[in-house]
Length: 101
Image 1 (cartoon, rainbow, N blue to C red):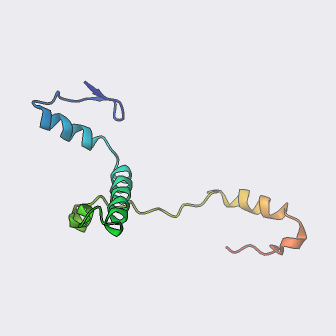
Image 2 (cartoon, rainbow, N blue to C red; image 1 turned 45 degrees about the vertical axis):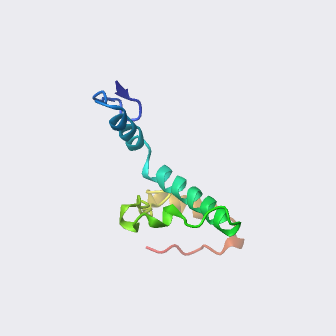
Image 3 (cartoon, rainbow, N blue to C red; image 1 turned 90 degrees about the horizontal axis):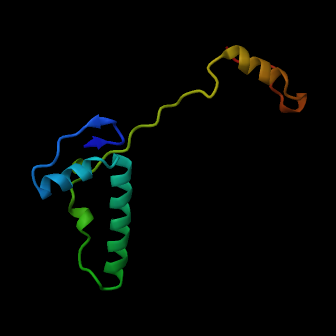
């Protein structure tokens, strides 16, 4: 079997439980986190209306939940010469006559 996301061979599961565990691993952390948030919101709704007494998602320790990957602050344009050219082409009304650095 080949994992379509990774394009690498994957060993066949030995039993049904292992097969389900393999399926869970193929989801990204963001997808798992999103699904947990949806499920938690659903249970909060159910508790408010008396359909449930507890929110099982809140029983999952925070350390066991997938963490959000930090977003890196990357410039849109890497070349300072291109930035200067673009700014110089802007009309005077923007007041960008002086560029830092």
